[in-house]
Each structure stands twice: as structure tokens, then as C-alpha cells.
Image (cartoon, rainbow over all chains, first blue to last red; front, side, top):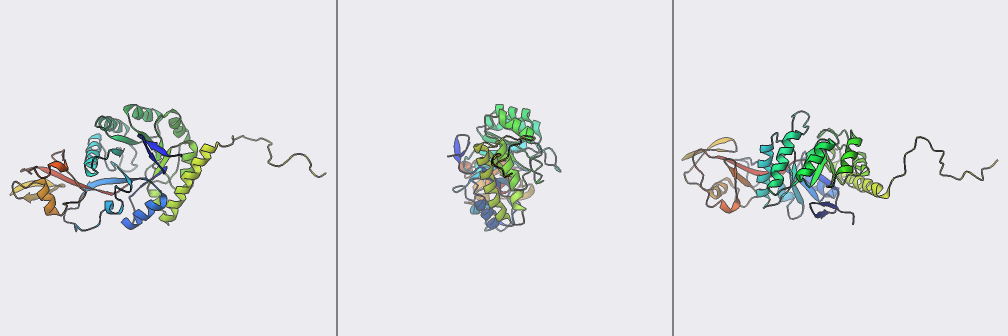
Length: 259
Length: 67
């Protein structure tokens, strides 16, 4: 079976989804289920003291017993905050240590702060975490993160929430060619073809949130993304035909033409 | 009474309140939360024993939707 294997564990779906930007938990769960995702990211935030304590929580809709939750460090601008956040997440999830690391460098672009990311990654790996790390599409940064011991590298296709798709397929290919750990595109996917292209380039998986949550019909888009990731993966495994500038290579016979 | 910072806000608690008691008072008993005191995680196993002190900075977090 062509499973996605991360840190020695196999997952049936190569599509990973976030849980942000949805209307409510019901829609979040419906979209996650429509996507077929096995791994689902969550953020860690302060409880709202004083809010009605009987309000349902995200984990009521997406229990850890049914989904592999991937706590992230969204909103962290320093390695220190990212490390703190994931330590809290690990405590919250009873020792679950597969996590997504992201350290941002700019509040407008949400571009990753790579020096802080490297520092955080080193600390987290030493503390026993299995780190899937969001990073720039810089092959050297990706290699450094892999050498530190991250279990997956997750270069951006384009800026978080931008939906611009893959802006630099060449860098992505470089990262894929050198990596010995899974490479997942994370950030910037906007529509199904973006996900398919990522998989055709040889990515092991795709992580997305806004592309589904902000589609006009999120459930339909979630299903489209599921199919796109599967189609792209199949095309990759099938081995595409070579591209040629021109080839005089028709698909129909060149003999027996009527005269 | 002791004065602490709870999720960034000033708060007053009875002296000797334990983390477990505080969670109970806030309605978080049995819910999936994590607690940090002065920058260090207070593991669940220690919630009953850990007593909150004057000036403590507490963070109580949950999982929420995010990408």
C-alpha cells in the first residue's frame, strides 16, 4: 500500500488538513472527513476564562482517539515560544509528540523565520519530539533541518493563506531530490491543481487549510483535494511522458492515409 | 488571598489553592487543558499537589482550530 510514512508510522492519506477558519466545529469536522485526512493540525491557545465552560471544544468534534492531531506553533515568533507551545501541547495530548513547528518572521507575510526555526527544531528534537517543520523553500535550510533530526520538512508553496499555489517548483524539486525524510508542501495551496502538481513533483504529502476552509463550498473542495492528492500521486508513480519542444510524434498511424 | 496572573490577567485566589482546585473552580476539571506555571509545565500528575503562590504567572491552554 502506498502509505505516507512519517517517523515510522504509516498514514493512509497523503492529504493533511488544518482546522482553522471554519464556521463552526460541525463544518470543521465535515470538511476534515470529506478530505479523508488522517492527520489534522490544531493550534494551542489560552482558554477563555469566564466563557461558558460547557461550550463544546474542538477535541469533542475531533477526538485524539479517531484522528492524529498535529499541534502547531502558529503565532509564535520566537524559538522559545514555539518550544513552550509544543511542550504544553504534548502535556495536553498525554505525551503525543508528533508536532508541527513553525516560527514566523513577519506578521504580514507570515514568512518563516528560519534562524529561529533551526534553534527551535534543535531544542525540540533533543527533547524527544518528532518534528514536522514548516520552512522556506530553501534547499539548504531544508537540509539543515533534516540534519537536526526533523522527521519531515514542509516547505511553503507560497505564503500562508495566499492560495498562490507553487511559485517555485524548481526549489521544491531540489528539496525533494536531496531529502531522506518525507517532504510535504505546507502553505499556499489554493485549488486542486496546486495539490496535484505538488504530488507530481514528488512530494510525499500536502498540508492545507485555507484552500478548503475559504472555498465557496468547503466540503466539495475537500473532496476535490482528496482526489487531487491521489491523482497527483498516481501520476507521479506512473511516470509521466517526457516533455519535448516539438516531436512530430502523432498518436495515430502515419501510414495508410487516404490519397 | 493571593494575587496571580492567569492567562495574562490579574486574578485573586485563596492562598494554598492547588492547580487541581483552580481547574475545578474554572470548570476545567476533566477537560483537555495544559497548565504552565512561571514558564514550566505543571504535569497532570502534579495538579493535586502543586500549590499556587503569590505572584505566580499561570497559563492554561486548550487545542483550538488552526492551520
